Length: 164
Image (cartoon, rainbow, N blue to C red; front, side, top):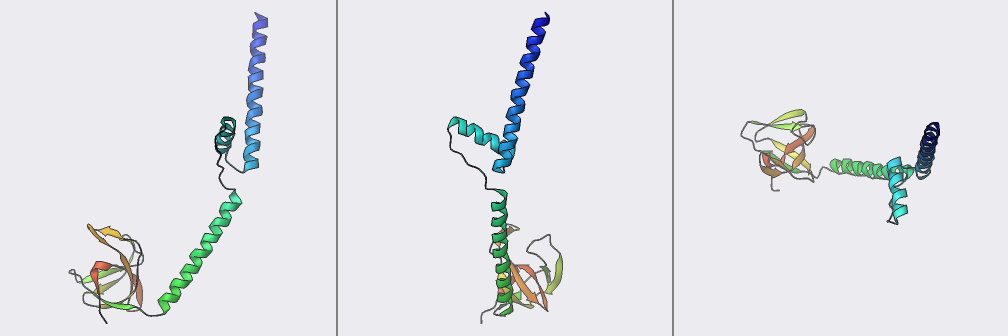
């Protein structure tokens, strides 16, 4: 009876030892490949099966990519500011039934109102958003305008571009 208990204990210790070695190997590979352990496990299993292998790029590579994209965004912001200074804007007349048009600080209905533009007032159209949205079932874009030294966003269907 005692002999069966010793064999069972040895088998348990043997399995735990193998599990510990595999776990430490997985952690070591994860550190080497700079991946989370589940990705490393996928890598090892695919390598054993002979499947094609895809590893995520290293952390430094992702940071470099983000830095490059941030620089592009910053340069585009500078270009946009330069374009806004050219003052080659079109004029548009506000056309609303409610009497005033809300000018917002961002191209979103939930953003703060920075000014109320009276109906039939003229605004300088700086540019239109590149994305189209739906407002009350109507497709349209947000438009960045300037009115009385205030800059903000209005919905395009509430203004009429004036012909020169």
